[in-house]
Image: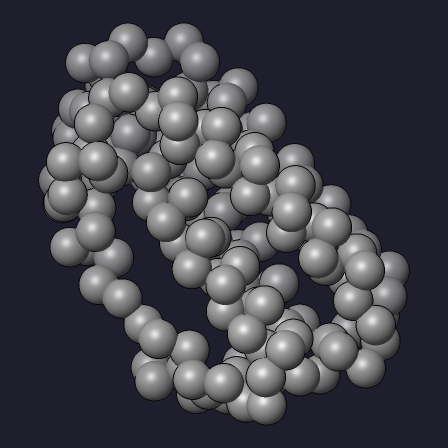
Length: 156
């Protein structure tokens, strides 16, 4: 991946919180927790999940940047999404966390040395993961959840 390609992906990470805020702003609490496309998550669960998932990934990135091939612990995202704090209609804290987290993450990405991009960690499910691979996969992850929220909203 070229430096320009990485910068384009980093810009997408930077834009995600504002895209999510704009998308969910018109929704009522009932719409936020509705699940018209079972078993897909509600819009609220998607918002809370983005924070949970991206927080985990941010920590993994920091481990990769500071340790030699650290283990990257998986977690059960469906179990996390079923917890009360991850299914509540009040998404204000999660939106704030997403914005702050992405601000830090973007700074992390933009200040990585060229050599650091090749560093890796070992994920129990996905094998060896470089920082470059994580950047790409989390851009796709964010975009995928925006699409899921749009499908849910269209079904309301």
